[in-house]
Length: 283
Image 1 (cartoon, rainbow, N blue to C red):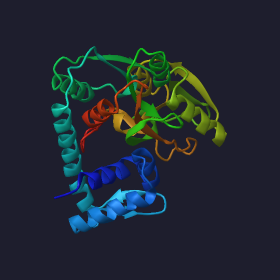
Image 2 (image 1 turned 90 degrees about the vertical axis):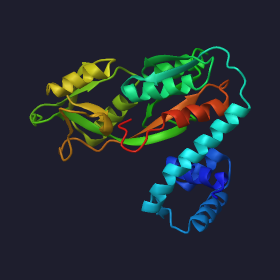
Image 3 (image 1 turned 45 degrees about the vertical axis):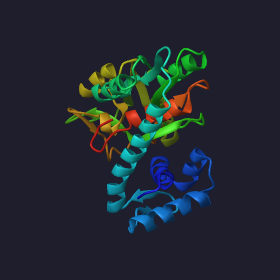
């Protein structure tokens, strides 16, 4: 039988991408986390992680155990919630970044609300910086969105590469500045794109500013402008401009849950478990 404490350390190391960040999140020492992983590998009789000085990745046995570990921890949390349940009062107010709203995510939130009688979920969609400001003003309980560089405390859900998205079959004119389709300020994708181009000395122009990812996608699909986008959200008709000599690499996006000070930690954990993508899920 696997110890849930060890499983939680295992899952957190993978989610956070390393032992130090996992230790910070769980309020443990790095040596304690390392000891937990050694004990878990002894219990499993298998090596679960490939470790380097920069990253950790799952072995094939680690991939197998990860699915079970998440399910065990979710069931454990659900059992605790059911046994200690207090009837919820009022709605759970959640802010969602405009670019991550999908049927799969909304279904996950619907299942979360349906499993808790008396709880309703109210959603506001927008740009992360605006949503965080609204949360700081007391109008939201949680915000889920992407960030590239930010020191604000939050719970990491998953990471995805940020890429330059453009129409399949279209090409940029090398004689002209790179045309960009961007969200309005403040936006982490906009900031990452403009910073990378400036540092690389690449001439560009902002050809379109739009608060909707659908509008930016239309510009990219038409070959009108390049948009910075998460690779998993490209979809049909768009490609990542890999190998384009003028376009520098972009950072990874960290999809993160930010919680208001009044949000109950147990509820934050439940939301995180509810919206974590399953293997193969584009979100």
